[in-house]
Image (cartoon, rainbow, N blue to C red; front, side, top):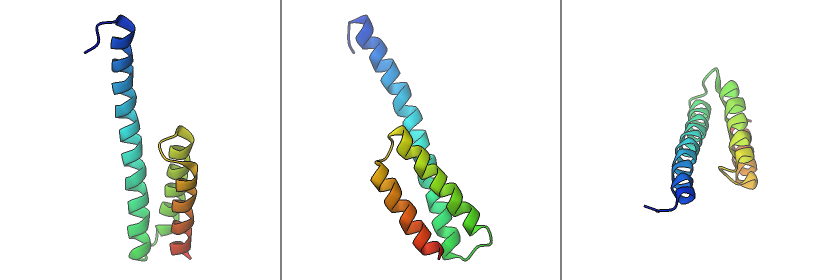
Length: 83
């Protein structure tokens, strides 16, 4: 544990950011997984779930949770499965 006040604060801020980022990334993965399962099962709401997954991927990329090219690749593969 750091002794300097600013370093102590950085540790706290980093932990808080890490928790928020982990939660957002996990939610994004869940959304993508649900869309893929819906496509595999030919569910009625599959198209809505694909749109939600695309939105989640874009949001994660804009926040820097995943690389923008990774988001584009995942969106492209989802769209291919949808057609």
